[in-house]
Length: 135
Image (cartoon, rainbow, N blue to C red; front, side, top):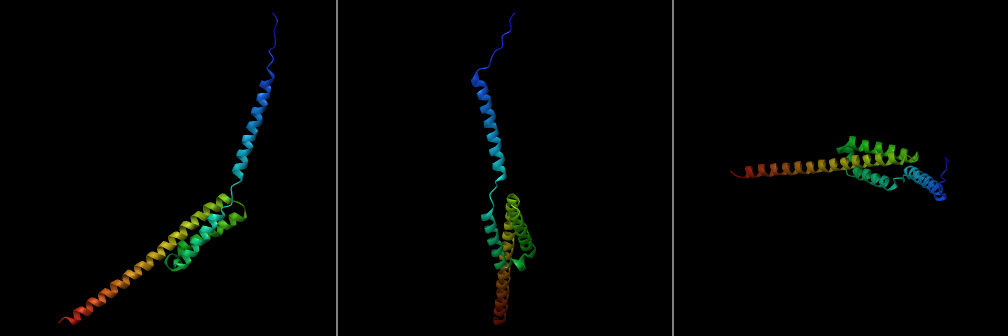
């Protein structure tokens, strides 16, 4: 009995090397894609604007803890940006934006409550004046 070695066609070995080359290219592109996260410049700018809005809206007085938290997180986001840790920078900037927005809303709410209190005081004064005028 004679053993015959079957030889693989040439295209099979070519196909195998093409598969390996494609696999390497896919893995390389995935690794490159993961490491090239863009800098969150727009998010940083939006957050800075929100913090300024909270400051100008009276956040210092109405929500000092929330505003301080926003400013601390923004500082940490800026440090992360400098270290090119863009995912961390974006996360911190988003958290800072939410804290600043909360401070702004709390400031508006406090101003609205003061206005309501002033209106109630005015109504009370008018009621007292009317009662004095009626014998």
